[in-house]
Image (cartoon, rainbow, N blue to C red; front, side, top):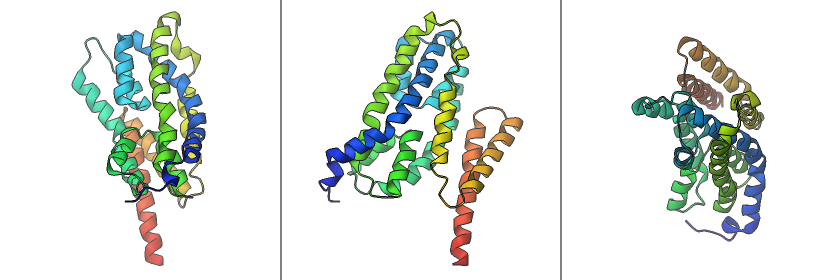
Amino acid sequence: MTVTSTDTSPTEFRDGLVATLPAIVAAVPFAVLLGALSGDRGVSVAEMGLMSALVFAGASQFVALDGWGVPPVWWLLGLTALVVNLRHALMSASLVRHLGAFPRWGRVLALLFMVDEAWAFAEARAATRRLTPAFYAGMVVLFYPCWVLATLAGALAGSLIEDPAALGLDFTFIAIFVVLVAGFRHRPRFFAVVAASVGASVLTDLLLPGAWSIMAGAGAGMLVAAFGSAGGEGRA
């Protein structure tokens, strides 16, 4: 693999930074809420910071806090986080196709710091031009520390807020995912994939409440996309 000057250019880095700024603005309030709720669950400020630094996944952290007890049931928390984050296996398989310009160690780092927002922006970038290490670095260089620091700030300020959930900051989490999904609206079979994912998630949540609805929705959307693609190739 040959690394070109474009792959490491300041312009690519700047473009990645600019692309992810709206996501950071939306993620920070949710991170603050996450940190503020941690105190009610018996999680210390240091533990909250360590969780954000090591896990770096808002959905699984929120689900883990929701099921946190005193003392915590570690195997159950681990299983829940695993189920929620299994979607990252599908996202990684999609993203790795676009990492041809990355050195081998760079691919490992890219997947390590991959969150939903980074995956969506990387896919959008790869749809129009080559995804470069500089662009990807620009996306995560602020996102990661901002997430960790925001959860720490929320944990520190949590005792000063009587009812953190009443602030409605969790809406930003929903809003950013709606925006990310809408960014793929021009892709083939978009509406069919979304309908299948939503339907499977809602049905699974009604029958088996919990994190399994996330994987059910992801699996249903993947199957619709795969079979739709196969059908299109067959007709061709």
